[in-house]
Image (cartoon, rainbow, N blue to C red; front, side, top):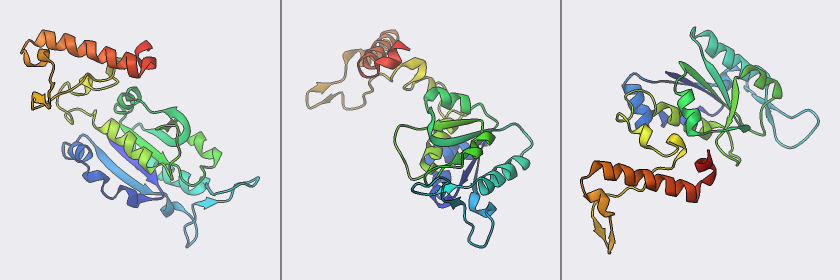
Length: 224
């Protein structure tokens, strides 16, 4: 899989490629990560990528020309299929289900918004819009890192076999409670079933606990 991130702040990704999961995916050959600076596609010596909005209003807007020139350049250098995702507050809220879908892409292009938004005409050239939650960030760089991390960790060989299927949100359930040593901490003991060695009983307990937690804390997931 190839992930290309289009941004006006490439410095925000300076250490991203060395983050544990991303680095492991790259070393395994499962992932190729590329960062494209959209300022390199802006006209003039000052490389302006933004301008004031028509109709007035506060803040600045990302311009069509540098963004789309960057996108077109990236696509022209890659002959295979690709999917372009714009990171915007108005997009579909990101989920584990979406992470699995994006992890199947051959080439994923993530477009980072910035300032007060992007010229609306840019969205005609993307396949979908994604938001990582109902709050505002300075730009889409952190959102792009979230999406890239969530998808990359699902690539073959990056996680231990079967691990992703046991995590929260698989089958619309939160993950069951986890414990490690010591078995008794200040009188708070690990459930006996986990010490029993009976794998079938442990499986049943974990299933019951996952359903209980989901019902109590995320009823909308449980109903789904």
